[in-house]
Image 1 (tube, rainbow, N blue to C red):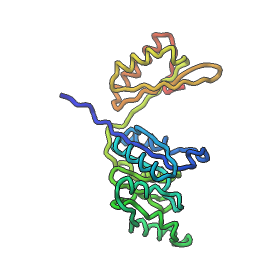
Image 2 (image 1 turned 135 degrees about the horizontal axis):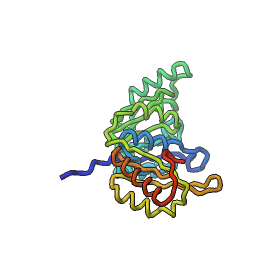
Image 3 (image 1 turned 180 degrees about the vertical axis):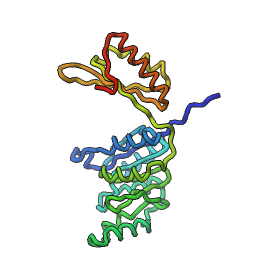
Image 4 (image 1 turned 135 degrees about the vertical axis):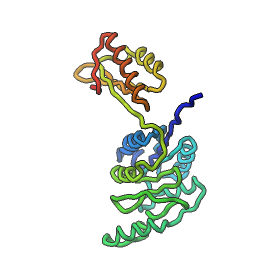
Length: 253
């Protein structure tokens, strides 16, 4: 008997009133999703919550129960409204403590930047039992506790933390993708897309319509963890498009 390969998933909680107000545009969803795919992990759900402890606790508990991993971004800075550490500790049922290594890192970083004051020391606070995620950008580390990862809200700092985690997480085969573009209304070939996807169980086809140059078109993104299955699915799709009289563009339009 053969068993299907385990699909590893992650949840993501985006924390911050500034995201919900529209003042700040989130860029972390895309970069975390792309990074996870390379690790063989799929981003399964994202929630955006305000700087309210009960809402963060609710989201953290729900998404960590439903996935192999959970990431949060935002709310780990030095100000009074940076409450992610407190909320996650509450969700886990553990106290907040000062991590000695984090404190030492911050003392070194701020030695020539005015010293370590009360606000800056807040960035050394972690849920009890946590490890640190290196941060080469600003000295303040990210936080890891088991399969839960607390990361910065600033995208380029998050990117550095993700780089430090590369290869550290257990996952499945990376998700591979190919894109096929076609000047056609997706509704005209909806049946073809359905038939091709049904015939290739290990593949998924996403359809992304667009309107350019006064014409309607769509890009079809085929995804699979198997390079051979991906190729066969793409061949089947392009054969179907050609048979129906549509020209297609490998790589997308």
